[in-house]
Every structure is written in C-alpha cells, then in structure tokens.
Amino acid sequence: MNHGDLWMALQLCDSGFPGGSFSHSGGLESSLLHGLVRRDSRSFSKYAALSIEQSYHQLLPSLRAAHHILKQTVAMNEFLKYFYEVDNRCHCSLSNTISRRASISQGKCFLRIVLEAYPSHYATLSALAAMIDAGEYDSHARKRTVYGHYSPVFGVICGILGFSSDVAERLFMRCVVRDLTAAAVRLNIIGPIQAARTQSEFASMIEKMFCDDSYVQQSITTDEEGKDMFEGDDHQLAHRRFNPFQTSPILDLLQSRHDQLYSRLFNS
Image 1 (tube, helix red, strand yellow):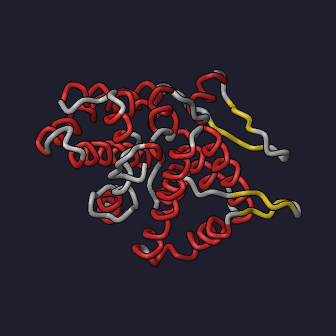
Image 2: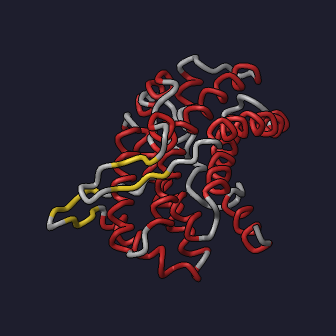
C-alpha cells in the first residue's frame, strides 16, 4: 500500500469521518436496557465478542462479494446487475426491520460522503449512487428494488479506491469495533480508556477469524440466470465465505426491540 492509499484508509476508518455510524449502536442500547449487558467491562466484553463475530459472518460476506464482482466485471451495466443481487442477499440476511433500516441509512450516507470527499472517483461512483437513490434496478423491463446496504457499498467503495479485499475487510471490521466501543462509552457502559483497551484486545480476535478463512481461495461467479456458482474443491467453505449467516440470534431479537424502548439515545 502506497502512502496515498494509506491516507485514504486512515480517513475511512477515522471516527471523525461522517459516515453515518454515530447515530447507531448496533443493538447495544436495546441489549443494555433489556438486561443482556450490564455497565461493567466484563459484561461488555462478552457482548462485544458476540457482536463482532456476528458482524464478521453476517456482514463481511456481502462486502467480499461486492468487492469481487467489481474486480471481475468490466461493463457498468453488468456490475450494477451483480451489485443488485449481492445487495438483496444482504437485505435478506438482515432479518429485522431495525438492522435493515440502519444498514441502508449507513450505506447511503457513506456513499454520499465518499462522493464528496473523493471527487476524482465521482464518475465511477455516480452510477451506483444514481441507482441506489432511484431505489430500483431495471432488469429486462422489470423494476427490481435496490437498497444500498452498508457492507456491499463499503466493499464497492474500497474496490474503486484501489484497496484489496483483505484491506477492505479489515477496514470494515475496524469500523465495527470503533462504532461498538464508541456507543458503549456514550451509554456509560465503559469509559474511554477501557474502550481503547477493548479495541486493542479484539484486534487479535478479529485477525484470528481472518486467518481461519485465509486458506479458502475460492471465487464466486454468476451464470446467465443469476445463480451463484462457487468454483473450488470445497463448496461449503466457499459458501461460508461469500454468503452471510447469523451466529447470535439473541442479538438480532434484542435489536428488533429497539423501537419499543421508552427512551432512546440511538436510532438503532
């Protein structure tokens, strides 16, 4: 990575970058008020481990797939078609209204800010932004809904900015940990020093998850009917790598209760 790319990477995961995550707790506020999390560091660390693992398996596959199709397609129309499919798969994996709403909000906000922050890439990003703003993709005279979820948008943006998939995935998980600890500080669950320590501790956990997947060298392609086909010897590993799944359903259930909270600091 050259110095210019390093500056962009540092900016994307900086807490001062207005990517839309400041108003979302990722279900932490609901979990606190429902009693799953207490205001102490040990309780938060247990919750954070579950939340980070869930984000890794539920959100990161859509980022990988979006980044992959950007590198594998040449024509913009072909790319938009495949992005629609990845985006809708991400939408289906987020099973509650709150997480879907938060993901769409963050995806659209992040794309809008990147368009303004990096005008040299405007031509490439504008076609994706136009489709997401319209909320639909025209496929063979049929209108199909496009949502603009956060993780596939993040993957596409990182690909356009020139980051490899490995870098994009780590930037995304860095943002996940940053947002989670920032929400915990604002909810008075932990202090800022403990938040910094937590980020350092979970870096090794996340890297271990990446190492567990690093030997899976599979690719995802799409045939003319839009069906996913995985090339490689181990179909199950490829399926795990590119398709999202939940690891902690209780977190999803508690997040779905967010709108029923009497008093709320966050939107999700």
